Image (cartoon, rainbow, N blue to C red; front, side, top):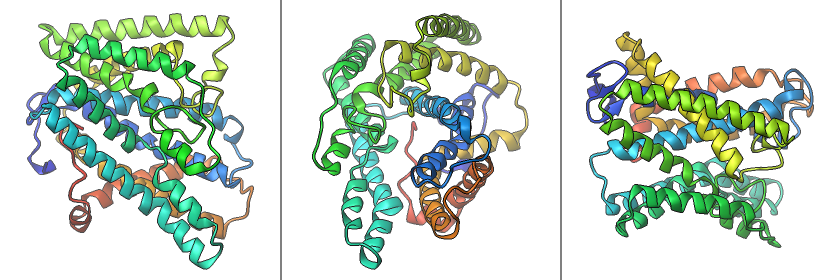
Length: 376
């Protein structure tokens, strides 16, 4: 899709070619915030951040932020399924395979190649890390597996509510299935794409399938609602009420802290309280963004959100390359324990801006011609 051809029909509502401004804003905000937890995750693992505000609270801040960002991505992806013109099981399966391929190539470029170079120049044991990274779970792998499973369920002619029931059962099962133990890292990384194995199991399908499904059903209900503003407002109010109730229950039962998400005790596993908490946040936040979008009149700002959303996969891939290679350079130039904790926020914005501009360059589009997937 050429972003130059995307124009607004109604601010805050629909875009030509089945685009919605509020969904573009959701994706843009998620993309802007996305580099922050990734920088921290890699840099902290390499012991590059040992002091400096707000390092002491970084696990909590970025853990909550990480769940917020990823759930927004997946929720908006589910909404996008409704808006795409080609919504057959075969088309879903094609997208799934395409995303798996993109995820594999990204893992090679962002990590396997550096480890291979280090194996040639420094330590042959780095070759093993290259293999481990090729199958390491990532949101693109999740997206690909989601599309394949969603295609299968649609092929079986399941109703939307039956698909939601499958997603709920998967989420509940994921919490009770014991994490398998592997003697080597690569098999664990591979299996971690499906069920939670360890802290490297990002977005296991069993746990996270529910979020795009909820987004899909939300968007379908929105599209058939006679009064769309009233529908979104009711969903937002329900989200706020549910968020207050769920938070109160978690605080009273002293189980809130382990849900300082993803770096806490829960890891990438989901259970009913965490899922409810996340869904309520999404409904409340969606309502806010929806009504804010209706107030945005500036064409330049509308085009910024649309362009960002259209290039979401390009920006995502480029940002990961910048993060990994940037931290590699950081490791070579800076001392361990550098008090750069607070600079994560500045660096994150710089990486987003760099990724955004690189994604628009013609030669980048020629190198990465397949990364714009309709309905994403």
